[in-house]
Length: 393
Ligand SMILES: Cc1ncc(COP(=O)(O)O)c(C=O)c1O
Image (cartoon, rainbow, N blue to C red):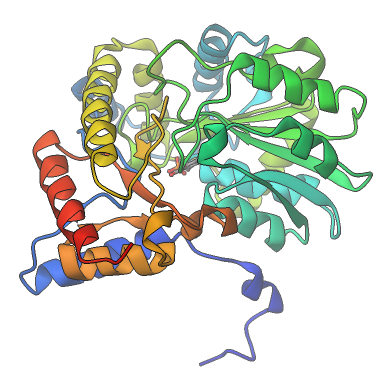
């Protein structure tokens, strides 16, 4: 109903398939089927107690009303100090806009920068909402394929050729969803070299997984002084502090861009929830042990999962260096990623996302989120192995 009446622009939006797979998996569970959930990208840990207590206290202390649109000044300041230390950038509270989750930063960035016909260069496979937002803003998505052969790093020659006079924005996601790949500092420097002579091009650097790196740290392009003013950093609390449902994130950008993001916020959300902002301050300033514990658990699961997947005949999987996703190749089975994922759920009770849920270049892969217990991962691997034996190679 209303197909002819809804605005045409609605046809440009796409969804995040992981949520659809979750819904299907839940329906199968309701029918009594045993399902191992590896489809959804959220930590399986509880939000650390000190953060929950800070939120309770904030509510009791009266932090239940509207806040300034870009966030409480002390929250913005805390984020600026955190980002300066964590990412090695020079920033201040005027450059921070607090928003409900990481997603609004990508949506607002496209709306405030992309004119119809502008090209936006982005990795593919990648978070599906990138492409959706680019199209919604009237932009032209220009994909940079990521492949396991290249450890899911960006092919700089390909990237160079993708930059045209129409390029307005480049998206970087480090570490990457869905591949778990990490761009090394040399990759970021190579991207910077390509863009150095094009000061008209902006960069959105999605750093939502930057605390979930198993070896060393990631390097933010905004740490390069000449790129700082044209980079919009997307970050938030969802993944690092297991706070996906709290809806708290932030963008860091030049103060003149921050004003535009604030305008989009006042027109859509008014502000982010008051008590979650106060809890977010506790997250950044309080003890970080829980983050380290989660990271250690993810590393243990990663090491098990990748080792076990590579022992299955026909599957090969790169060692992801960050986030909590494995992106194994299933090319040898000769069926599409979506068929593989759909049959894996129906026939083997393992919920996973097909690689094309993240773009056309995800064909031949599936995404497994290892935000699940080691015991469940072992069951999943067992089921995947049995399932693959039913497929012809
Ligand atoms: C790469 C990437 N960026 C941004 C987000 C959005 O995060 P949030 O849930 O805080 O909106 C996600 C969530 O899955 C993600 O994977």
